[in-house]
Image (cartoon, rainbow, N blue to C red; front, top):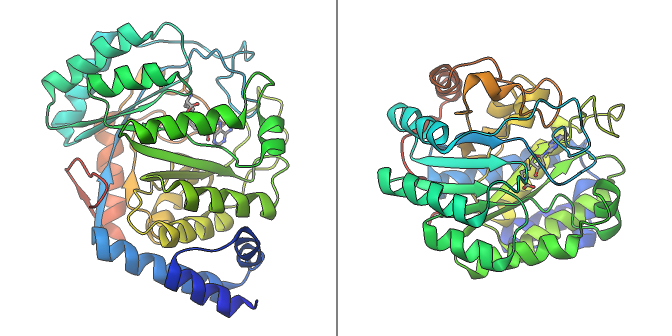
Length: 348
Ligand code: SAH
């Protein structure tokens, strides 16, 4: 099948086979192909979300982690990481600051810190939902049991982010310690969906050993799973990990993947990620211009920001929350889009 037929099929049916995705991706350096994808992505994005960009206040509430993902700067074995954990009061203060700044979604993200048991999380989430009943709460706290996801959903969590990282078993094992498995990752995503969460999956682009056929598998996986949110960012090395000397992922390929994801999942909530903004100072604007409709400025206390270092040189680590949002609002406006102070749920 030639590339024009593949693009036509993609635009018409929003679906491709793995082989077709692979052919499409092999045109990653073809500007005409990327331009067609970008235009289609933007037209779908405008159809469902107009020029709106939703903001999520990111609260990085702990960097303790029992996992040892090979790419991640807060992995268990990194003894150079300066560990911290916010108290319930500190987390509620972040929400209070965020609410005043106009956030109506709080994203609680952390390393998989066993201190935060179901009981503690339920107490925390109930308190947030009680005080900010017009806000959505998103949790990004790794793999848990179905029972735990159920308790958290009942406590009021609306959305859950759990990137699948890679949809290929062999590649998954190269990025993760042996006690982790793609099977369990998929089980978590399935459980979250069945329990009624708005679910987010996604992958890093350019993780060590990744090839285009693996990214084709990721796209196919996303097409089948139909998540409400997709997080895609370039891999960026961290100096204290096994991948310290690996190359970062490609911005251009990340942008192409973002526009393809917008086409296969037209209503998806698609963040222009911090990793994209770290590798390219205009990265988040570029993301919005290929179909992204979400940004996630940092709401964590300034003193801890530099310690939530998943990768090197992460942006906004020295800023106050008010500065972060003022800065991103200005940038979004300059490219003709508009930050809105809404919950920003999945379009129905
Ligand atoms: N413990 C949670 C949150 C992980 S951090 C969980 O497991 O879901 C959120 C995301 O950051 C990860 O899913 C991963 O895709 C991304 N990430 C981690 N290290 C990274 C790196 N070195 N470069 C780019 N992205 C990275």
